Length: 520
Image 1 (cartoon, helix red, strand yellow):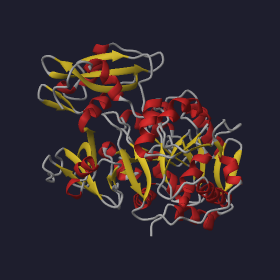
Image 2: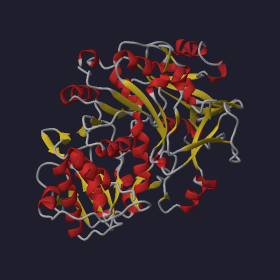
Image 3: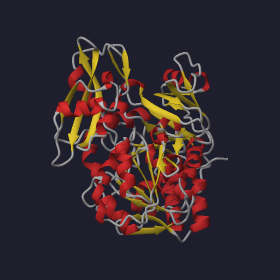
Image 4: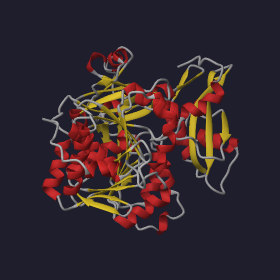
């Protein structure tokens, strides 16, 4: 039987007196944590919530967020983590679409509620999980816990739905990905081989907890009785200080965050000696950035993870030992690794036939980690899970040794003059220039070519080059037809999703407004 709560019971059993959570001045051990989670389940049941009810979580990273995952699971409720970067109408859609009848909210998002609650009539109770006085009309999280008896486990397990994780909705309506207890436990087992998780592990929640990239670590750290430290919002300087202060051993962040860290002016002065494992994923890792990261943190093991929410989310892992051959950087640095234990990977053509090794197609997977389906979208579920395979929408190929290489999101591929251009490859070439701090490559309308390759670039402080110099630099690394035909220089950081990925949909909007995209 697969239950999320079994991980918590194991943490208490093997390390009940060990530090479970570190948030500001608050500390608690695993025995206390488990008792509070059981009381939360009991308190919510006392408010009238029943197993299967959906309860949203709208908060920054904190210890109570982690308690909520386990307390809701213990009560048999379905957690619905809400993207903290959403506007009120988008929050309304997620809550209403999932049918949430409860919401856990912290200080940062209380001001949004007057625009949200009138549009969500099914919402029965709002529980305040922040610090300070409880706002009028809300229930106090701490009072709820203090006044409740610990609940027994509701016994939800296996194929029972544990959570609904919404996709970003950058290409239309957000999709609610239904994940079961089996899905989440399978993912935890898959990620377990990525780092030596143990009681001495101290993991920092630096990526947002609403996102499954962070969730990939949440449950396996707990299962091993390790410690959780929380960074409410990602900030490179604060991250570096917390690693030193709390002797953090393990982190999972996205490449844009790594880029900020390794180029931060304080990085050389910070004690990062406790950090042993850094996992990354969610978007392509430019070779120039990982090379810089290895220089800055030479003793850290870097592991790439690839996947998506529909796969709970990890599908492949690239272990650090595969990055080196005879003390030299391997050509496989650009690989996303091999399929994890519970995921069979195939590269398929448009007719769902497996393509030869080295041929680009759509990355597909199957196994216990694949979602139950999309909430209230059976047709889309059937299309995405057709013929028993999860179709990721990502283009890639597999080499003769089973290593998978991601070339691009299918929707991000640019078709210029009949040639396919993968934006990730062009970005890799741009990042190779020492002046480039951040970049994104998109297709923009072109009357001759249909689309042309356009780059949006932000330079490092006190560094700048001309558009011509950037394009010339790319021409030395990739074919001419792949190189940017135009460049926009941005003085501001590029827009990011809540998960830290550059929002190419936002960057495309001004160019495609009033047009229909003619290709792809």
